[in-house]
Image (tube, rainbow, N blue to C red; front, side):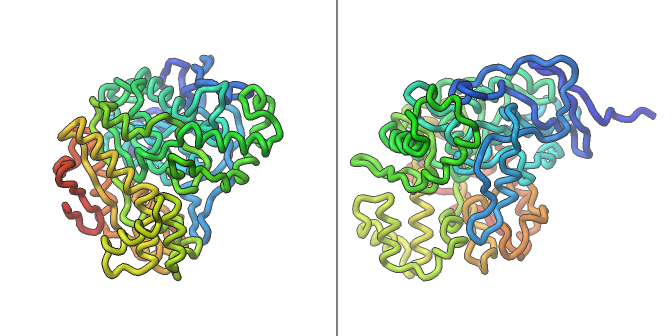
Length: 486
């Protein structure tokens, strides 16, 4: 009796890689899609990887992008989300592939871009294990990209948004190679969460992405999260002050990755509010895309015309930034005004609008609502409307509302809470406990399976199973223990 090869080889445009079979398919880890970004190359566009001879081992995780340690949010354990942190090594522009059994070929392809505030995270998180997708007949690919100063610092002598250029390079590599893994290059869905979702919005709006993707899923991102060049200059100036040298690619080229990473914690106090703009991400990160116009505006003008879009956010996004730090309980009127001032020229007017919109809500509930909308909710709805206006019947809106009982019930339907359900990984031990993402009470038995299969359905057909977004009558699928169209 013949048994399948436990370590199958696949030939790519750069060389042959050896994966590892498992019950649901085959996994290939740390496969390069671009050359190692070192020295001055850290601030240059991604370059093709040098071909290798022989067979490259793709059975173990490789290096990750340089980043500061970040595995918790106050009292909340976020290690399943941030993963192992910085695993040192130059060759980190890589991707992981979970390929289904050959009977599914050609299979739909889903490409995931991780979050982490543009400064942390990787494709190596156990939360992003793609075996559930392979089990269900999908090629799942997760991508590493440049973070922090190499990825997103605005420099006069380097291209902007180098981390997004990495994503585009990965998509080109996938187009050329995914068929060898059993995937269909004519059916590729790009999806991401948080910073990854902001990058996905940027790709959707970028003409350079035309033909590379066919569908997109934006989870808790925003199409209005880009920095203006003037705002980005403020971060650049502070980096120069911290490093005591001109903030140019040429001047930074000889610094070590450790020196560049050490600067990141010093950038949180940079005030990005200008005469014409507020901090589009509320101060939660010193980096974002740097663009002359927001992705939502480019989408409204016709960007991504050929792409189906599933987009949504969580009901209580802001709880992640408030509850673990003790900022959700005991919110005062002054706290509300200070928070509103970060995103509105007339804070008292904004607070009153929320009081009218949410009659009977407590100050902590209003605090969460203001933060949630400022960070992700408003930008999500604006992007959905922009896409639906330009491309009717191809935009679908959701809201994830299942509430975790973590942190004594205060975490709720916070930012990141939907990810274990999308990946059908809710059983991971690190997600459960009073200080863990999913809390102590088990989620509804079929929620993960249903949400996971809905994402696959959309990636396969362009239809998640509910009506498209209508600009005149905005409605969304509310996803929780029960699903309601509202």
